Amino acid sequence: MTLLAHTGIVFGRCLRSTLRSKTNLFFGMLQPLLFLALFGPLLTELDMDVSGSSWQTLVPGVLVQLALLGGSYVGLGLLMDRNLGVVDRMRVTPVSPLALLLGRTLRDVVQLVAQSVLLVLLGLAFGLRAPFPGVLLGLLFVAVLAAALSALSYGLAMNVRTSPEFAAIANTAGMPLMLLSGLLLPMTLAPGWLAGVSRAVPFRYTVDAVRQVFLGHYANTTVVVGAAVTLALAALCLMGGARLFGRVRG
Image (cartoon, rainbow, N blue to C red):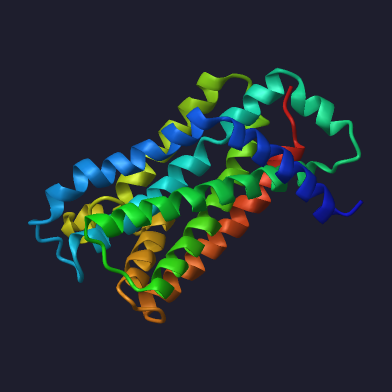
């Protein structure tokens, strides 16, 4: 069988497992919804120093946050399967290691995009106004970022021994990246030194691009740079994740 067929088999198995876990689906969506419901109204009267409404600033940021947090921590599930011997049993089958990685990653992309659609619908109920093509492009950014981070997370999970070890690495890396990306508040509000530091964080360019497409701007410099940075990050993460996934540490 081909890599595509193997990937489809793994994807189907993982998706069925996800759909059976209603609790994980519910709580995976709860946090970003709470950000919209409890944090969004606080910004309605705040001068965000950007174009558009506060919802056109917050919703794109929460979408990228969903991809960042959701993608970064999927490796915990693989680590549990690995400790239970599930991964070892799958690795002795004819299914290639790359298909094992891609199938799981594709499942995560589908799940996170579905959650993103629900989040956008809730944003519309609160007052978000964004053109339909812009929303679709924003979801495409989320899908690419989710694929990148999921693959890297799985690669990490194959090379650590315990869940606390994985969580420590993910938290230490993820928290400053999230804060410096301007996900909830744009970095134009930050002092000069902090805004300068944030320019080294690739997620800043992604969220800036998503905010632009939600305003109906599809080909300006911010969108082009954001797309280039996001694609480059995705390529590096996918290659790194695949390499780590095949280099299992005992």
